[in-house]
Length: 216
Length: 115
Image (cartoon, rainbow over all chains, first blue to last red):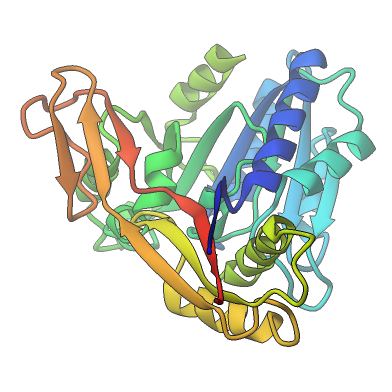
């Protein structure tokens, strides 16, 4: 006997993500999900972004890591409200889910926020699959990785609304073909804006900030 | 990497779908539809599923996985095609707005009970 079910296996997360979206809409806060592989410079990009946006724009950050509060500690120095999610002290989940964001957002408090940035766990695979109730997704790739990452991890670049190519200050010392990396991103996601910048020096930062301000 | 979580959700949904009036139900197979672009590795999913279904009505159930192709549509010119490689660019419009029609499914379609 066959029993019809016809359900998305991730339905529970999707339902929770929709609840989050409604909660954030009520609070009038724009939520950005920031994703990348480990070491691409998400935290440094955020530190500079927060320094430039605040205090005109009130920003909160939810940081996801498997272990440690190192990133949250760095971000808190900018004056932004920061909360950390550790998926497991001894090596746990490789992505954030909608229920984790619900708990963290309530702990952080969203009443006075214009923008909530979720720094997802460094991983180009799993976070792409889990809706957390965000309004937009940004993927960060750095020039110390491979130009072909977008075609190796197509879902991540396909589901993102914008991309950052970080650490461009290192280009003179590397054999990295930035034009090819951008071309690969646009192959996977035609029309996606790509911001080539250096979070360390601030080079190329203005178009990224402008894009972010326009989203709010 | 997240196949264990997906296997756990799959088990929860399948167990909920079993008719309550059935005594000692045994599931023969679960029929899944997994999109080619979804980050689910069928082999890992099957491995996790086998571990967590021991001593449940789902023990020894087979996962029949239908792979759903990636189908893309260009909203600019209306062309629709099946992608074998991660190229989402419309062959006709260089910067056409494309959208995915299928390929991201992580669905359970049905389950089959043992006779």
